[in-house]
Image 1 (spheres, rainbow, N blue to C red):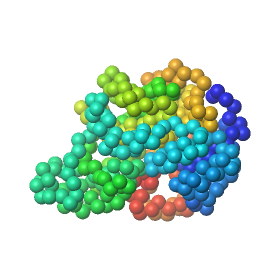
Image 2: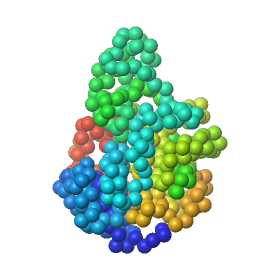
Image 3: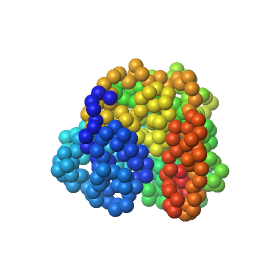
Image 4: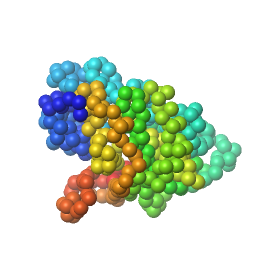
Length: 380
C-alpha cells in the first residue's frame, strides 16, 4: 500500500457478522475502526475500537459523526441496499467513495444491469414482460418453471420458483414485498452450471481478477439452489476471456467505473456465459482470501486503502493480477436448516489442516437460523 494506514480512522456502516471480516482486516493494518448501526449488540460493535447507536440510513447524523470524530474514510460491506446511503454520506462528508449513485443504481437493479448487458451484446437470462395482476392469456404463454425475483434486493431474498400459473399468482406478491421499487422480474428458470466472475478496478482500468465455478445445492425442495462450493479457477475461464471479457470491460468503462471491485453471477449454457446479476461491492463469498494467496493482492485490503486514501494501491494492479492460476482454490460453504445451533465442533482442527486459509463462522453456538432464512444466503 502507498501510505501507512496506522492511526487512520475507518467507519464501518453496519456491524453484521460478515462485517467483522472488514473490521479485523483493517485493525491488522493498524487502522482505528468505528462501527455504527441501530443495534446495541451487533457483532461488529463487540470487536470495534469504538461504536455508536446511529442508524446507517440516518445520513445527516452519520456525516456529523464523521466530522466530529475526524474519520478518514467509510466502508459498507455486503448489502446492496446500503450503497446509496454510503454514496450520499461520502459526498456530504467529502471523503472517498469508489462509485457514484448512478453506478450503484445500475449495478443493484437487475433490470438496469441486464439492459446494459444487452447494449454491449452480452447474453442475459430471458424474461417475461408481463404485469400483475396477470391475465389468462399471458399466463398460458409462459413456459414453466420460472424464477421470480425482486429487481432491487440481494442475498437471494424474495427469489422464488414457480412451477405453474397458480404458483406464479400465489408467490408473486411475496416476491413483490421484498422490492423497494415494487418491481419483480419473471425469468426462465435455469438449471445449468454456474460461475462467478470477479474484477478489480483501478483508476479506470477494469482488471479480470478471478473466475470460479459456483456449485449449488438444488435438493432443498422448491427452494432456489444455494452455493455449497466455489472452485478456482473456473474451467470456463479461457473461453470467457476469448469471447466476453473484452465486452464486459467495454461496458464498465462506458459506465465510468474508476475504482473498486465487481462480481458477476452467470449461468453456463452450451459452454457460453449467460449473465443474471452482479454486485459492485465486497462479496460474501470472501474470495479475496483466495485471490490474495494466488496473486499476493487482497481486494478487501485494497478497498480499505481506497476508503482511507482515495487510492486502491500505489502499484499498477494489472501488472500483478493474473486470473489464470497455476494452483487451485476452493471455498466450501455449509448450509444450515432453520433452528437454534446447539454446537459447532471441529473448527480448530480444520484450521490446523495444511492449505486451509481460514474458517469463517456466520453463526456462533446458540445462534438462531430463522425460518425465513430458508432459501436465502442467511442459511450459510
